[in-house]
Image (cartoon, rainbow, N blue to C red; front, side, top):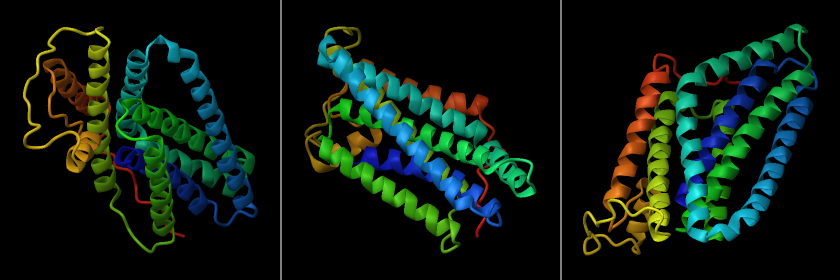
Length: 277
């Protein structure tokens, strides 16, 4: 539940920032709500189509062996989560600037509202498609039942939307740098945990046998089956009996993520505060 909540909250918040910037810049344009709302709806519907195809793909490859299929889904989710962190580190601020420019062009009459609706729709589609893939990864990990993932996702949706609305109308002010830094670290830990879980599935299927010795057994102190153990497993990938390969993969994903963010990111540019209407 916690993983779904964090992932959906982050994606909804990012989409909400995009929509908020566009709404703030174009608040003097007649009928802007109708066009922007249409763009959001189109993006949501397109994301639903992606979800439907993801389900069909799941059924198509389910016969390859549950462990191998789960490992494949988790691997794709890890790649996408890692790329998401790196991409946002580099393009977050310039994306906001481009959206402001597009909104200003509509205000000045040099660009149509349809073009702005397309920009918003594509943004919602991108974030929605990432949510679909990430939640498939959470389900593939097998740590939470479907109802728990759905509940966490719904909670993340409501929380993200509420924070965006309150920020937009000026009731609260969130330091964007702190928020994105915190969620970036959480998503990196989630990705590392998913990678370790994918390694576990491959070990179960005997596709990965190297370095399969148990590094430690901390079940006497904190068991995987306990409430706190499950929560830490979701948040940081904790397991009470990790193999050497799981540990190496976990640390490697964290290292790769932060090295790529350091190399390709633009730490001098922070996600700007949203304009308040």
